[in-house]
Image 1 (cartoon, rainbow, N blue to C red):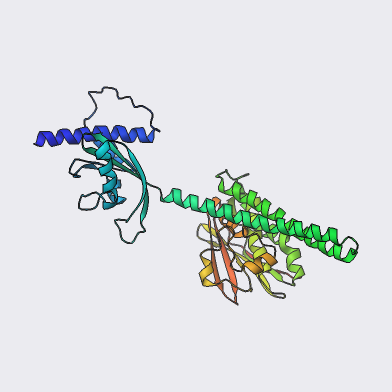
Image 2 (image 1 turned 180 degrees about the vertical axis):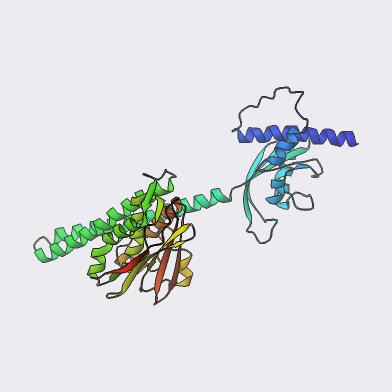
Length: 384
């Protein structure tokens, strides 16, 4: 009996290893060269180390071969039995020998985790023996959900200004004999066209940031220069609302990366701070060194962000206050761009906010080697 069991396990190991290898190579034929010097345990070792779940079952559904991943995915329970959700699939294969594929949701072995979506393949090993191969498709489903949401959101976001442009053009044509009305319609049309242009530009920028492209011009860059350029970019908007821009903190600190991208990220934070702050308030940019990182904090005295929105504000197109965001011309992409720029530079961005009091966004970036500084830059107000 022991010899029979060993033979069955060996056959299952070899057959299952070949079947899995075919799966990984897209179904292409597999050539196995005789190699007497290789250990007979190689097929079993191969199956054990795979990052996909694999198990072989005999005619009684007893497990004769299983790897760790199959346990971690819940394909095989802790007591060594096949998950009930997969038994019907195995019975069908055993009945007619035809391979079955299915998407199933299995409860996670760790009850603290969410159910695991799996792509499962059940294949005959000959006779009544069946192999079960399972792939975790959690990330695949997440990406597909993000893609669907993105397509739906971008369709809606583009449709709004395009529809407005069409209606305004028609209204301007109908009001051709009223120069005042025509001018009003054309000014509004120009505003919507600008909004559409910003949306398209930010979509291109976000797509490039998410595409894994290397940072352009990666080199030591001055935090002082980044702050100065970002402040210059928003100075006119601050002046129009009589908002004071204050800059201060440690200077002569450098990070490594793209000056242009970092100015864009900090500029987006400043634009948001100004857009959601009232006239006569203050927006401050503070810089300080914390061990091997530089922190750039943008603080405003604006309307603040509700606690329930804080976890989602870096999502593409998410708006804590949709009506106000559209009124200010926001695209809903600015903070997503900030997150990706900072992440691509090896840093992180966090937010703290109190409704009616204000918001602070903090960007943390690694300091370039040898670019430490003890000097302090005085607070410098740039008033409207």
